[in-house]
Amino acid sequence: MKEISLHGSRILTGEAAANIGSYLPPSHIVVVTDGNVRQHYRSLCDTFPTIEIGTGEQHKTLATIDYITSELVRLEADRKTFILGVGGGIVCDVTGFAASIFMRGLPFGFISTTLLSQVDASVGGKNGVNYGGYKNMLGVFAQPQFVICDPLSMATLPQKEFVSGFAEIVKAAMITSAPLFDCMEKNAEKALQKDPQVLEQLVYESVKIKADIVAVDEREQGERRKLNLGHTFAHAIEKCSTLSHGEAVSVGLCKASQLSVALGLMSAGERQRVEALLQRLTLPATVNIPAATLYAAMRKDKKKSGDAIHLVLPVGIGRCEVREIPLATLGRLVAAES
Ligand SMILES: NC(=O)c1ccc[n+]([C@@H]2O[C@H](COP(=O)([O-])OP(=O)(O)OC[C@H]3O[C@@H](n4cnc5c(N)ncnc54)[C@H](O)[C@@H]3O)[C@@H](O)[C@H]2O)c1
Ligand SMILES: [Zn+2]
Image (cartoon, rainbow, N blue to C red; front, side, top):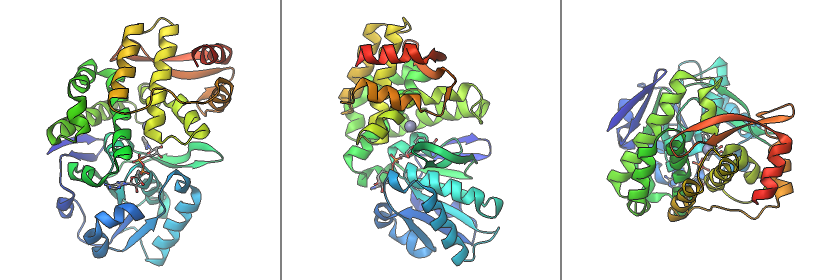
């Protein structure tokens, strides 16, 4: 087990969910989870009052926050109550948001049960819901007291959900760590086979990268924007296709790499390495969305300012830059590359 500290939050990689007792206060605990995860954490959910939410991105809404808070009222939660989110990125995002606004903020923590949430969603203190057709439009910055990343939870995770997490690990490597990228190239097959040592190392390295960035820029004024690598594309792709978040990030990383090649920031060979690694990890490099549709969806991204869009672009492998790209240029490049 390894521990990473981030603004008072303890992130425990390689820790067993069964050890949850040592992280929880002695009483007043309420669990939030979803129907799938609940089946695998029966004893925990039988021990504490449990609020079950629906599964899928369509439940990452204010209606779900309304439901959780109404249940907290029914359960007579008060300032002494501790909220434990048990699940993937969606459970963590809504649990953190509901806990942060209930009575102006209750303490909360996570057992993070998908690869994607262990390496990304449950770390960093961003919580929220989608609104008005926009991803993560409403939310708060609030750090969980702890995040438990148990490798055993991968055993029950459907393969499609499991591999989605690799997209965020490749993203982390592309942002700041050429050695992590090399390590993934070397161990892709072992990772796919859920080799415990390889997985534990990949989760730890990715969390460390995210935590180091968030430590210097919690509120996304500068450095943290880099964590959005591939995501302006991904959010638009999620809106226009049935791809999961992780799959959309995979395509988004490839699209960002294509742009970087067009802008002279990356070599064609490096772009090829990115695509090849994602494909070895059984993730998509392309999606069938017309260029005009994708461009229209990207224009609506909330990170757009005026006639330009802030895009994170890879510079080689292991480095990236935030660039302000004029919308006209983006439209031309997206059309040229699709
Ligand atoms: N807050 C952030 O910084 C941040 C960062 C990245 C992603 N996200 C968000 O995370 C969300 C995606 O997260 P996700 O991919 O974990 O999706 P998810 O929470 O929907 O989980 C995926 C599926 O796996 C099931 N599941 C979860 N754990 C399981 C387990 N151990 N065994 C069996 N089934 C299990 C869930 O019920 C669900 O059906 C998106 O909404 C994305 O926007 C947030
Ligand atoms: Zn993401």
